[in-house]
Length: 296
Image (cartoon, rainbow, N blue to C red; front, side, top):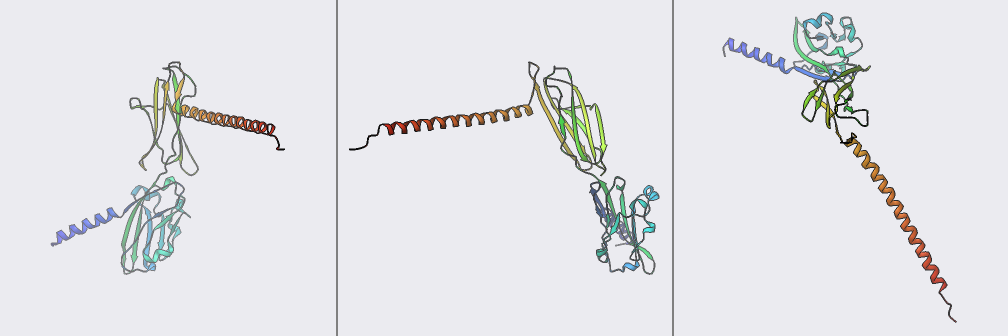
């Protein structure tokens, strides 16, 4: 192989290595996470190594140049950015095996970055012997939405009614969609409120106002883009000719009450039959005692 072809192959292998070394991690706010950096090269001495964890990217490195530093086998906190103080730690029992992974504690919203692990060796001269990149994203699943329908027990067709959809403990801010399932059209929410909890997760409350129809089928979607998750809740209700609204959830409640009443009635009837049977047996026994005559 000529020199030009050999150089191209080395460049291709270098690009392929850089691509495969890029790891993506998704963590929940407040959790601890491990940023991986494994060196499987030749033997080394920690005293001759410099290990730097940095935020990758020109704009980010201006505000924070070093996330964690290990120089000649010792942590160097003087170089560490203030926002990572007391929140990082190397795996000391695995450093000798080439495991330079970094533990990041209590992950926050501002920790979403691409991190670079740079391992340098200082023997005869300083050279980079290993690099890895880790992309850290934050995400948490939203709870099953709670969908509330109109507040009134009865209303007229065309009257404005209100729906509300609530979901909690998710991250990042979600997309909320309202869909009219009768014709699969997208509806515009009337109001949207979001609140952030101390752990960084969010609770959302979306409100929808629409004109009532004889057959309302409304569905609320909560979308988490990072996790590619969609959770939903639906509301189906029919408006009867007398203006009274009935829904499947109400029918379920009525069915439960009817079954309970039937069970009580069955017990009462059974007790009555037992009482009649006991009385009949007693009367029969009494009549047999009266008609009995002792032998002479």
